[in-house]
Length: 239
Image 1 (tube, rainbow, N blue to C red):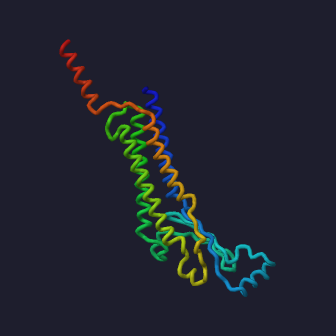
Image 2 (image 1 turned 45 degrees about the vertical axis):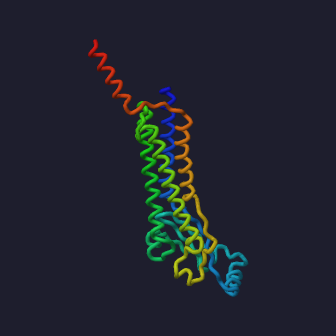
Image 3 (image 1 turned 60 degrees about the vertical axis):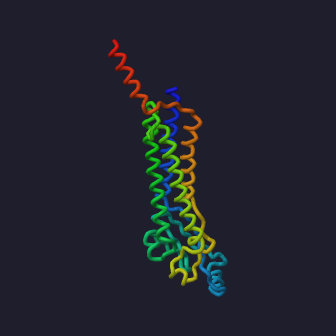
């Protein structure tokens, strides 16, 4: 039974480690969204580009943008070649106001909370893998509690970002200067893999809960150790 219990908590440790890794990767990577904006040009300009390039306009009047919670990249070809620039999301949020500052900060906060809860679950799992589980917040109950909280925090982060995406970013992520140059990203922007890493973390937190629930792990009451010590002392005194 002790061997089975140890295996169960090693599994929850691994699931928690993976959940934390995916959350950290989600924050660190720059692919929460991906966009393929276009520059709206008149027929005369377009025909001129076609003639110059023998019918193949290539990247002219097209662009590619991706960014995460902190940084990203923008490559736009206004007709004279690709111009690439690094995006500082914090600066973009404040100066260009492409999406709500509060929603952006809230997303970061809840992802960070999810990471913290994942680390707590890792610590509890490691502790219970090498000691006999008890009925406290540092026992199997802790795996339930912290994993459940991790699911909630991560889902809140995902929901907040979805609200920002569908209410703001889906329609426009271009700056005012770029809009003036007739660039548009309307309905040309989609969620990318960094966002979906959140959902993988949710599944891994859920795997923690399912693993402990289905294992029927036996654990001693809080007073178990005290009762055993008391009985030992009584036996000693009788002797």
